[in-house]
Length: 360
Ligand SMILES: Cc1ncc(COP(=O)(O)O)c(C=O)c1O
Image (cartoon, rainbow, N blue to C red):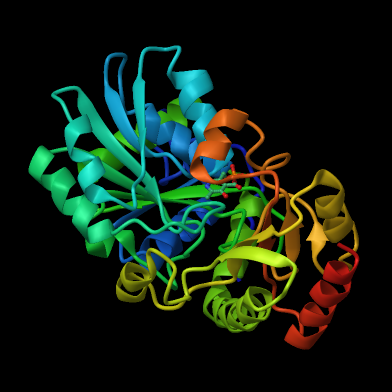
């Protein structure tokens, strides 16, 4: 097994003559092994691993300078929205939020200051789909970088670089780690100059993961394909059950033919994963609380992508940092509940949801 190099520094042969490793903020052999594995998972030349998904996103935004503009998905993880609007907007970077499911909506937003397009697909929590190849071709035409947050899909299901993106980012905390026991992020890419710039940002700003965490993500990656198959199988059965349930108003899961992004999802993804969101017919706080406190296998918690099923209330949890008016506009309503379907026995999961829904 890859050793866990639990060391902050490395003995050198002579002043400034080292054996490939000098100080663990710059490099660590366990991290090097992980970064090679991450790169190969996305058919990328390079991988960089960070202390969290948000730290990986942060490094990408640090490629920009005040005055630069970004076109970003209006529906995405709340923490990314918070980073953009609360940290970088006050520093002079301008963000335009747009419905990425409609690539033509991007066109009027480009100008000579646009440096980056940021999307997430499927989005958290509404499972909206970006046509990566189409958006990538618009970005190429405009000479603007495209970054894709591939956390929900995983490299097993979708490879944005192969579809023309310049950067792919993951919260490795989720499916890549897979066991809800580590916080980590990563970026995979092909351009050597961009890699060097991001590496410089990484070592200068210091958001690096520890060796034990790198070991855990390496271990998680070994079973990614097996877990993803199980997540997708369970996800499909649960999505169909919930769709026909009388207490459910709406379900967001890209595997349904009437999901707005289904055809693109089918084209660019190898499966539809285990993430989905539902809206209860009775969208009151009390009804939501009754559902969410009565599941036993679906644990009420933030995060997703672990082997254990989780249930989450985006409006008050993962997406609380998005103002209510914005949330309502995009569909992250009070009554929305997000499920991360794990790999437990599917009949047990169905029974768990059935009992909780009876209490609504
Ligand atoms: C889609 C997506 N991107 C990024 C992040 C941020 O990752 P982390 O929590 O590892 O910083 C999350 C976390 O929930 C996420 O769901």
